[in-house]
Figure: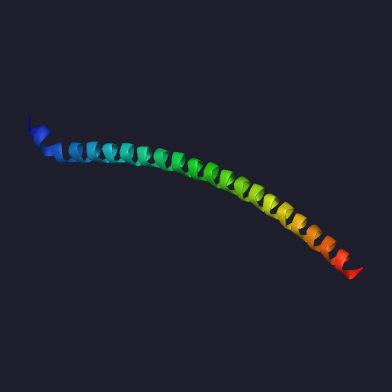
Length: 76
């Protein structure tokens, strides 16, 4: 019984360190999931932006062609 009273602070400290390490690992796993989710979201956002730029470029090309046609008519 004397040994238990002598070493209980060490045992409690050991258990606390183990609990802290488990919580740290769980937090790390959650952060990893969040980082993967953010990378996927970034990829999707970049694809959407690229599609949007393509649509804008085609619309601007159409407007440019219309303006050229109007200038050609007026210039004759």
